[in-house]
Structure formats: structure tokens, C-alpha cells
Length: 577
Ligand code: LR7
Ligand code: MN
Image (cartoon, rainbow, N blue to C red):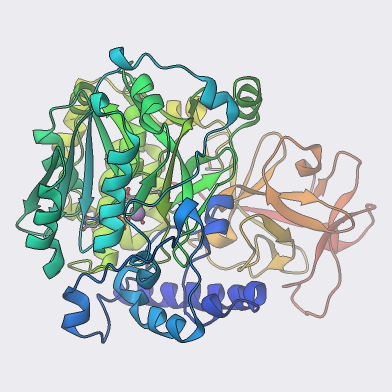
């Protein structure tokens, strides 16, 4: 299992590296590090790997002294107004050596005041909304951390204290998930002792973010629980819209998540509207919201809008609802999958998941996890995913396990009886309902959708070329691969859409077929006429002769239909479950 995993990981690393060098060879900082995931900007764009498959090391060959010391040393004005901090050339080298410690630029963070100013990130329409502060429910803010940097953790705390009306904030609960950094001991306690209503709980054993958040939730006195990661900064007016919506007792409400650069700590806006969802392999993904949501957003830009899933770290929920729906799955360890589990549970059991555009919180997006995964990252993630899928996904759990044998192999080690009991007791709806009603734009196979390989008579299959960026790219025939290779399989819908994982659809572009985000465009319709696939204009999907003998790598396009076996396609069905 580990070997397959490593090979997979190596594949992604080399792929990402290649793309990175192609895209960013102007940028020293990016080029000099072997990041395995895409940049922040891409992350908030579309469909970029957020999974932490290549765990970092905890400090590499740094000295214990460096690791254990709080190096916070603010420089007047640095990073004020959310501006980036630039380093000198020789400092960049030091910063690079320290990078593995937290997977962000700690030298920069340590120079920015923990009280730094930030611009008001709200839109004009959001600024106009009046909240009846006296009648909003009050909040316990819960921040869990494991070996977080002192400056980012304290800046998270201070931003909450500075920007939340005191009457709305019962307390901030810091939950230390068995950190072993010296500065997070007494030094942190002393700092916190000077602040009003900030408490520290400590977990003796490394439990993971679910266990730690539950520890906090159990003692919280506020009516609403507000969860934040330990490297966030909230902006003006962030808490009122969350509490206003959470008051209604049927919703998990998320802020609009902005970007704190892992390199310069600059605060930047993320794209105006995004949806949370997930790929065939159950990796969390940002997507464009549906056109319905976009329409209602433009009519009413300050209104919270529904999302199929939440990213997981930043949300508010009425405490009573949180517990009524079963808190969290305590069987989930360390990191991962709890965000999807909670989203499915909320929707399927009669609540909602929403994003309010009026609450804006910055979060440092990291390219890999800086901390250790006891037992190994694969085991941790796979067991969490297996739990979530088994309890909530019904037929689609079979799909997930079928094509992810390494997860299937450990599913029997997981006892989820108590979680299934919760689903029964709450009389939750099934996953089919979720897909059809909450995320009808989804790209999963269904009983009404054909699933398999579309093979050209000359060889080569219709599929997304490895390395195609998130937003799509030119389409060529790919190696047909095996039945279990998700990257080579496609969904063919009743309307005639050819969909690949990640929500890419085959579209006739200008002269060349391309993979593009699935939309309502008629250019994405390919009607099956015998062994041919025809566009609305009656053109045939054609494999253009290229350099290859077997068709692989040859470009795809739509051309006048001829008696040509480059227009003949064989539909090889693969049972999806
Ligand atoms: O063992 C652990 N113990 C912890 O206390 C592991 C982590 N943690 C803490 C950690 O210090 C941090 O404060 O838990 C918090 C989240 O961990 P991150 O920052 O490593 O997670 P992330 O931001 O990479 O990942 C997102 O998905 C996670 C899945 O388990 C969690 O739900 C995170 O909260 C979530 N973060 C966000 O939603 C922020 C927006 C980013 C996106 C997408
Ligand atoms: Mn985080």
C-alpha cells in the first residue's frame, strides 16, 4: 500500500514540478522549492490538490534551539494593512531553510505585529447590512493547533479579539493538540493570561483536529461554536454575519475564505464566489458555484449561499445543532475527511451548509503538512475517508472503494456502527438525494450515466492528459489503461456530455477539442450516433493523425463526418460499482 502510495506521490511531485517550472520560472521562491501542490492562487481557482499526500518533516535538520524558540520580533510597519513583506536576498535563504518548520514563511510572520491592521474586506453591500447586535447569539471561538508558530497563532487570537464586539464573544478556547514546542508551553500561557476570556486546553496525546475540536466544544459556553484554524486572520465585521445566520439553528455557516500568502503573508481576496465539493477520490475541491447560485448572488450579493461541502476549518454552528447532529466522528484521527463527513451529514440530516460573503477571514494555505502523521499519512487519511464514505455515500461508497483498493483494504479495520446509528436515528436522507438536490452539477457516475472508456478504432482513448491544469486544456487521445484506472475513465451523460473526474467536460473549441469545466454550453454535447460522436452541428469527433502509431497523444477535434476509422469510437463500459 505504502509503495503504491509513494509511487503515486512521486508521480504528482514530478508532474507538479514540471508544471511549476513551466508556469513560474520567473519566480525564485517557487522554483527553488519542491512543492508538490499548486499555488494559493490556483487553489482558490479550481480543482487543485489540497490533499497533503507528501507529509513534511518537522523541522528537517534545524537545531532544537531554533525549533523550540519563539522568534517573534516585529518590525515597525511590516505587513500592516495586509501588505506583503519582502525579504532581502540573503534572508530568503534563511527563510527557505526554515520553511519546512511550518510550511509557510516563518521569518516573515515573525516580523509582522500580532496586532497588524487589515483592510475592511467587505463589499459595499455587506457594509450596509445592519445587525441587531443585542439579539445575536454569542460565540465561543475554538482554535485547535499542533506545533503552530507563535506569531501566527497569536495573530489569529488577536485578530479575533480586535475585530469582534465584546458582547458577542464569550471566549476563545485554544486547544493544544499535544504540541512539543517549548514556546507553546508556559510562554503561551503567560501571553494568554494577559488577555480577557482566552483559555488553553491541552490534549495529553496527539489526537488530531477532530479530537481537539471536540475537547473545545465540550466546554464551550457560547450559544454558537466558531471554529478557526490556528493560522487565520479575521477582518472587520467578520463575526456578525456568522452569528446572524447560525442563530437559525439549521445551518453550518462558513465565512468567505481569503488568502494569506504562505510566502509574504499578504492578505489577498480570493475569487468572489466559490463552491466546496470533492473529486472522485474524495479530495476537497473549490469549484465555480452553479449558475443558479451565481444569479441569486448577483441579485443579492450579501446573502449567504448554499455549498455542497465546506473546506472544514472555518465555520460557525449553533452548539445545540452541532451536538444534535452528532458532533464529529471521534474515530477520525489527525487530519482529513471530517470536512466532507460533516458536510454530508449536515445536508443529508436536514441541515444546510452555506457561505456568507460578508464574513471575510484570511487563512494561510499550505502546500504540504508540516507535522507528523502517526502511523503514516496514507493510513490516517484512508481510514478517515473509509469511515466517511461507509457511513454516508451508499452506492458511491462502493464506487470509491472499487477504484481505491488501498482504502478498501483497510475499511474493515474501522468500526462505524455508532455513526450509522446516528444516521438512522436522525432519519437522514441518502447520498442519491444529496447528489440530485444539493449538487446536481456533480460529475460522478450514476445509474443513469454510462461509465467507462471511449476507445478510438485506431487506438487511444478519450481522457484528460496527465498534467492538464485545473481549468482544462487541449484534448488528445490518451493511453487506454486498465479498468481500475480512474484517470482513464469517463462518464457519458444522457444529454451527451463526456465528463472526466474533477468536473472537466470535452468541448469543441476553436479548431481543437478541449477539456473545460462542465457548463451548460452546447459545445459540450456529443451525441452518440452509432459508433460516432456528433456535435450539435453534426461534426464528428475525430482523432487527428499525429506522430504516433497507436493514436496516443494525437489531438482530438470535431470534423466533417467521413468514412474514416479515426471517427469510429468503441464504448467499453466499466461497471462503476
Ligand atoms: O493533528 C493535528 N492536530 C491539530 O490540532 C492536525 C492539525 N491540527 C490543527 C492545525 O494546527 C490547524 O490549526 O488543525 C488545524 C487544521 O489543520 P491544517 O491547517 O493542517 O489543515 P488545512 O488548512 O490544510 O486543511 C483543511 O482541511 C482539513 C481536513 O481535515 C481541516 O478541515 C482544516 O481545518 C481545513 N482548513 C480549512 O478549511 C481552511 C481553508 C482551507 C481550505 C481548503
Ligand atoms: Mn489550515
